[in-house]
Amino acid sequence: MVKVILLSLFIVAFAVLLLGIRIFFVKGGSFPKTHIGDNPEMKKRGITCAVSTDYAERKAKGLRH
Image (cartoon, rainbow, N blue to C red; front, side):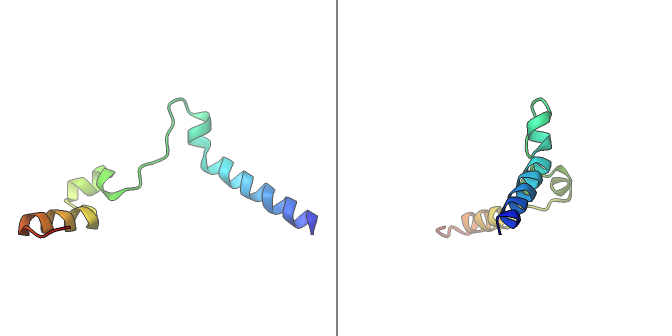
């Protein structure tokens, strides 16, 4: 039982390390931006976040949010 728990903790720690390579080892590193509104390719195509679109439409119609 202890071996399984230790193995699980090792696997989780290793996964966090791999996910954080850019943060831990690159100077000025940061997590990649995954929000639709921050993606330059989506901006080129005019695709926005659903929440932002809903807010803009409600504001244009004079509805409360």
